Length: 71
Image (cartoon, rainbow, N blue to C red; front, side):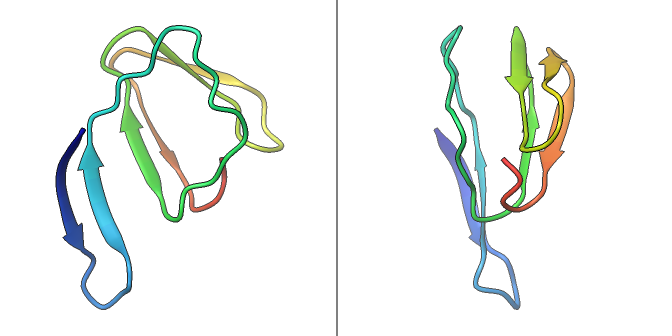
């Protein structure tokens, strides 16, 4: 659910602030986002395995930042 969106001044980028619910056991597979992703886990766990790095598990209350095209 998109809560807010705005243009980033001086660029052709847009910032999107959203809430996302992910079903237990869901695996998105390798994919890309056109920009930086910032996330906070509010419930449960989020398993994340960026290219070339070991998998990490984020728990409720933890946050992560993913650089452009690093997923």
